[in-house]
Image (cartoon, rainbow, N blue to C red; front, side, top):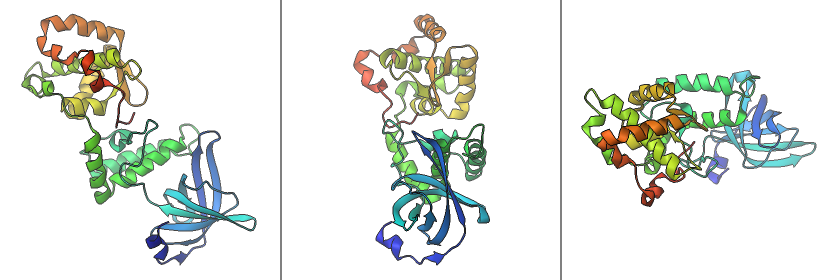
Length: 293
């Protein structure tokens, strides 16, 4: 912990603390400890096994029915036990990264709109953490559980959410100009145009970046400047027609049926030819830099 945190008043505590975390080699791990003291920034507990400094754990206090994410800042052996210092809270905005080094998109992780109200954030988080809690024998996933908790702790705090949103906006792709045309927004053909627009984006992605062929709903929302509420029906229809399919993570990729549909539709609809870029624009459709899967 930093010096300011250490100077905060510590209050003695005496209660059981349960810890859970995910180890890539050993899977979900559990430990029990006893609370020693705490401050607004963190707590010290005593455990029978050492914890890795810098690791992220989920700490729960059954006696008070509370829990949250904590980070192991020090672990010192004392006799047959270990004194562990936990820092409560979340990493700085932008420091939570996906496996490819990009910033995790908390809205995509919680499957909510960036404009979601606090009530929606709380409701969705409650449903998802119940599903992925390590104690759930069927769907428990400690790593995803911790990521969901970090997302909720950021988005449920107005100041942290504002800072996170600012970082996120810098990483999002800019809308493509063609989608600003009225043909994609109003009129009888707007929905049909959005369907073909999504397929053109996925067509390019598959052709120019075969190792990264997928795009997420959030990618569609950002590239097309169309709210996801308007895109949900579009994606549903394309899945039903087998023109696209779910890919790794929360992404979608085009199918062979979708490719044939795009190629047969383009000659009669010149507006979409702008979306099929040449190899010189490959950088625009390369690996998803700054985007979470």
